[in-house]
Amino acid sequence: MQGFDFSSIVYLILICITVLMFVSFAFIIRSLYIQASAKRKKSDEMEKKLDKIIALLEKEER
Image (cartoon, rainbow, N blue to C red; front, side, top):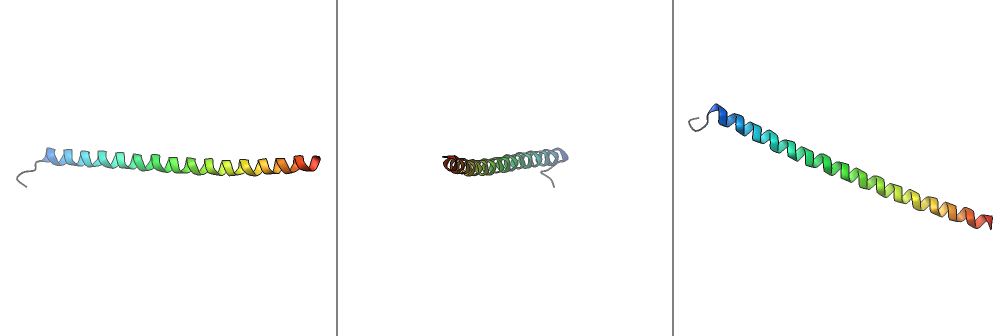
């Protein structure tokens, strides 16, 4: 390996590790965002159901 010395290999490995770190970070942020949207959607559905139950109970009281 005439063109590569030890320092170039170390720099290449460090660059690869840095790129993998950023890619992993992006996937973690993406999964957190997806989980948050799923929770928000579930919460909205629960709120609609509770509103419907409250409306039915108020209708029965009259």
